[in-house]
Length: 115
Image (cartoon, rainbow, N blue to C red; front, side, top):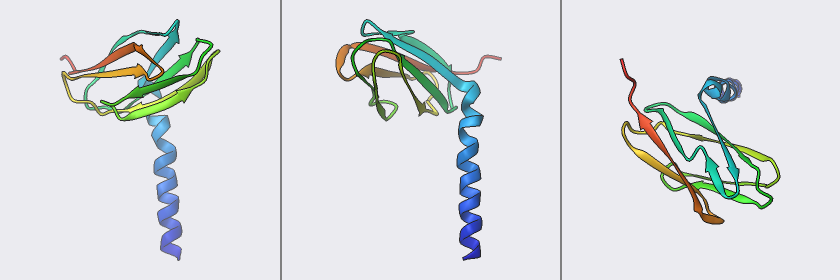
């Protein structure tokens, strides 16, 4: 029983520290008039990052990416969500879109670090 408590505590500490570690790696996207801004984003390859999306449209959106394996509903009129993605492969481009408005699309490209 004692080992189970320690394991649970360790798991809590590890999970609780993940968002803090990724806070500096946030990508901010806005959805307005069914258009993502920015619609083309570069992130460092090999690192996890957080995407923060604000929906300024009056309608609900489903922020989705088959390539990055996420989908999340975001309400309109200023609704905000965040998803975690990565690590991504260097040089690869990944698509995201609004499943309710297929013309609303964007890409994230994983770049290699330049020396």
